[in-house]
Image 1 (cartoon, rainbow, N blue to C red):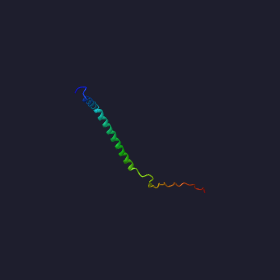
Image 2: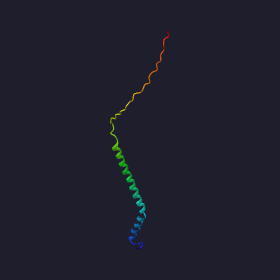
Image 3: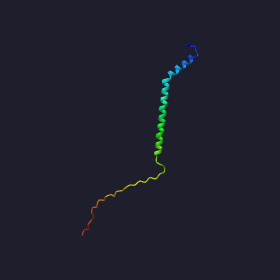
Image 4: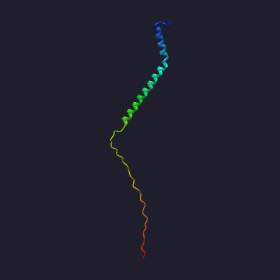
Length: 82
């Protein structure tokens, strides 16, 4: 083809697109990674909300108390003088 031919402009455009190929692929891959990250974050948020307890519920706590042991008192006292 000669430089002045009508197809020369199209050939130049094609070579420009080819040069942008790696950049174009990088943009696509970046977009896919971002899309996957947003998708996985949505799934994680959905599961967290699904597993959350219902608000306003009543919670009962049972606890066993063990009795304390008391030591016997020492006998102290005063004796009256006779």
